[in-house]
Image (cartoon, rainbow, N blue to C red; front, top):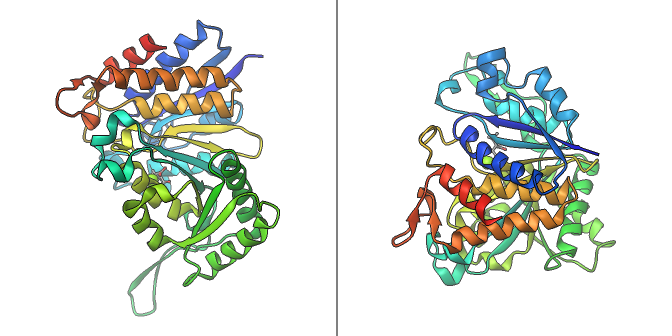
Length: 356
Ligand code: IPM
Ligand code: MG
């Protein structure tokens, strides 16, 4: 049966990078990939047209699709809007409404890009980490939240960090399963020395280890984990952590690989439905200039083929094609180094299609 992909470019460079990913999907369609693509609005561009960053129509389209391809949301233009209608709310709403609790963020260093990292090549060469970030709970969604005015007239902002045992269990289960298929090492990141909520997190993870003892488990406080990621990142195989810690650590891990423009992500729900997006943002500073790196989005399509569309061979083809264009020395500006060939967003997309 024809599978459905919702295509949501979003804002800024989202349009440019998604267009290249769509080229790749279209090329695979002519090789027998049985999918149908339907485009929808999300983020600031949705707000401009409909007054909301997540129109009902988009939500319905996403719900009825097997997979969602998302570009990026946000931009200067919408920064002064009320937080309830900012572009980011569109993304968070999709995650929450579809129950996409498991966010997989691989950080892999392509050997061709070893010198694009700001870290010494020997520290990062061969790097292959998977960060499993809880995506629909924690402080991002906890109630109560807001800004209130105290009796003395001073304003006070507040958010709530909250996790139920069941939420911790289901993300930990995903992490153990992934670790089992890789290097069999899982590091759970928390702040159990200060935050009761993550003290519970640690207790639940330890408890679950009893049924997952084939995987080696360690625990780290988030401050130390951030330090270890830049000190000796290769000690990690799989990391599992809360929504906010995962947000921060995954940006850090991305930079170890040289460019945030290279890293895809998958966000999955209990039904195996998934949303696929680059981990970088909408980069309004370079939007519309045909210079953004489309590879993270193209690699997100590979993750989509693997996790939601059951086409692992096609996923392999995309990953090999990306490897191939890097071997050819093609580089967008973010990963450019001397003696390489600088290419635009569209040239990079075309090169990947040619290498398929
Ligand atoms: C990410 C982004 C988002 C997040 C923003 C755009 C809401 O930083 O996907 O990492 O904080 O989750
Ligand atoms: Mg982030």
